[in-house]
Image (cartoon, rainbow, N blue to C red; front, side, top):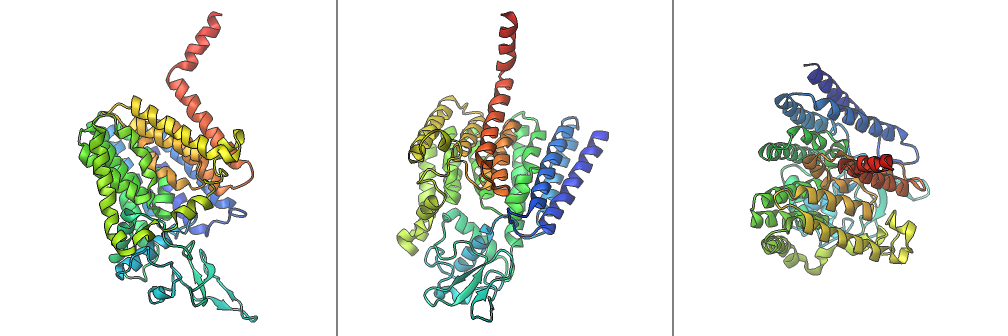
Length: 457
């Protein structure tokens, strides 16, 4: 009983601190927002303590705590607007445009053709200064101008002069969410949907774990994770949808439903492309079924958008990859330290290909979540994106396997976002690699075996 009470107290503390962090601090300014960094560190410490206490809680009570914590912590994450990303503003805009019967790939957000769709919370009126210039005072907004009119504008939409980057599953999701609310509704509709998706993954994990003889307490690694609350709910990143679809695909394939798994995988890839890295762990047996279903689903989802917009469906993807430094090799945190930047992309591609081959070869088709953990986690370490929400694809498989050491990966990416100082990225990613390798060696008893050999000598 004491364990239940203590665990509940820690969860309440997480709820309070989550709500405080999203209301007390405005949009992220890495130069000054040490408060948000401290709150985040505190949440991760409370999370670790709660998971440790949960081990001794009876199973039924633990399941109640896991689900309740998922709902309450996620609900607290809705207490304020997005605090580290403006991506959900683009999501909302794409949904509004589609619900008006216009392809989201047809025009850039500041196009004059879409002026009649602009809302005050996405396009607040700029303030004119005495010298005739204009200033944007609303948080999460920047100054821009209409195309082709050149009229001064303020907008909360990032990259407002380029076409959307998001694939069709995401676009259908955005349209569906915004269809249910008026255009004046700001960030909460996507936050609420993110909460529902995150709780849905919690329930799905618990159900799958119980069926497969896995301790359902491990679902807390997803349900209570500060990363999930922040990135799936507060910032409403669509990666949570991709994560849900990949979990569905993985569970389906593990039960022999390869066509169904392929459909879910294709839809996940059509949500944000990066879920393609989940494919190798699903191709051990009868891979053609998974591949055929995934490719067909991906293509069918694109058909209506291609018919409406043609090659414009590529959006800003090529420009995004260049902007993020992947073409130049600048974005690979560890690889760039040991090879010339001009060769970093090739080395990264070779490492990813080697990892994919090993995962395909070694994955148990009845337990593909281990392969997913290795594949997704390793790719994130190699690619080292500056956005922690990419790790939403990884966390469900940390939960399914109980390999908590892989949380070093989202922690490294979070450090990169909240403390973007020189050397932080390489140090954080390098530390994550060390933690994963060290704990994995310990799990395999390599370290005790080595100690015995030294003792004998």
